[in-house]
Image (cartoon, rainbow, N blue to C red):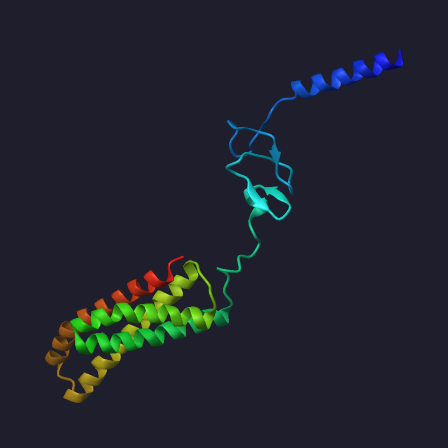
Length: 191
């Protein structure tokens, strides 16, 4: 009688497993799954599962607390901004002086600025790094143009007409050079 009782109990356990409702993904309730997150034990589908160090994790548990590629210290931001501003200063001076040929040089200068920022700051990526890079190039180019305009104004005695003509003539070239340098830096620094 004891063998019949255990066989009946084992058969009832197998039927209970078959009758268990299927798990549904917590983010996609229309998907059936048998996988659970290794940390929070929520059911996850194959689209939500991330491979963790010891198994599958959901998106919240699998996300690192601090991403080493996009997190920047304030000193790294300052060095990156200073390096790109110095490069933008050179681009602004050259772009304002040689006109259309400065645009070609600005493309290559943007790539060199991006490479130097990567070398000095470290191999960082992300939107904050791109904003630092572009902001530095644009600020450096603007400082170069304003400094050049101030030098021209002090050399001619402050004639307003000549100053307006200088800004009208050289301003677009310097702005285009800065924009093309940003595009060259973006093409080198894509994330």
